[in-house]
Image (cartoon, rainbow, N blue to C red; front, side):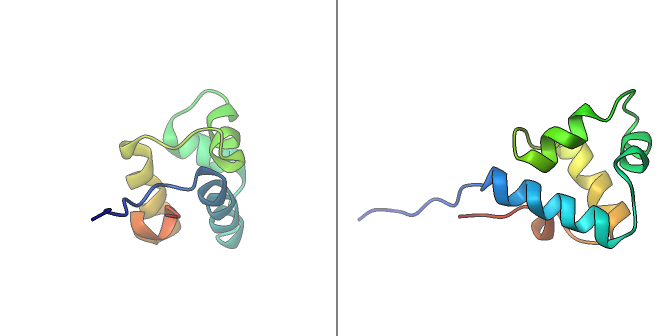
Length: 76
């Protein structure tokens, strides 16, 4: 019996993060400052699907975007 293991779709999650940020009327620099980053590169990497936010940053994003962590991540 083969067990299907869910995996995070990084590209779709990045697009979702981008859409959620925009839907709240936030700018990348707003999220940068909220997360305590000196530059916006990490947020751009998330939005492109090149990287995922750390668990700490996922919790911050969920709070700021008023969604659950599950609503940020896209599984395949």
